[in-house]
Image (cartoon, rainbow, N blue to C red; front, side, top):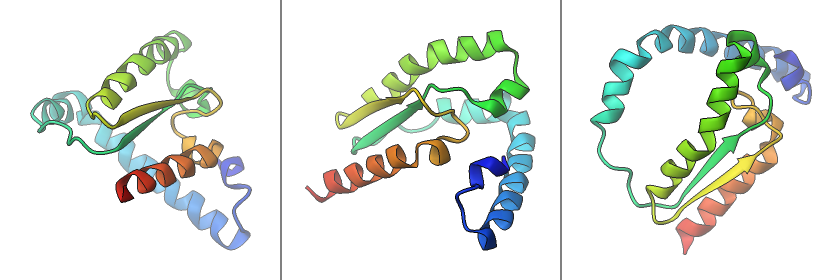
Length: 129
């Protein structure tokens, strides 16, 4: 994980890594109720508002997921991910999907910060129109 933060200045690098680990541990515990509680909340959620939307689909290798899940499961996830994300983008008449082949899911913001920033800037520009 530290290699993902290598470009950050030293005074913030270690606190950033420590915060990330703490957040990851909490998320890991919260994932234990993903299928029984969270999934039902998603099913009961109101429709997606019709607002500008950009869905970033990270299709690159994700080292964290590769350590946690078998290769076959990762392959199945990546095969279904583009269609699932396309459906999400299509929920808005202003939706768009951008596939990033060179970034993993968990580190998209570090591996393709340019793509994330571009999407944010594009959404801001659309909102101002």
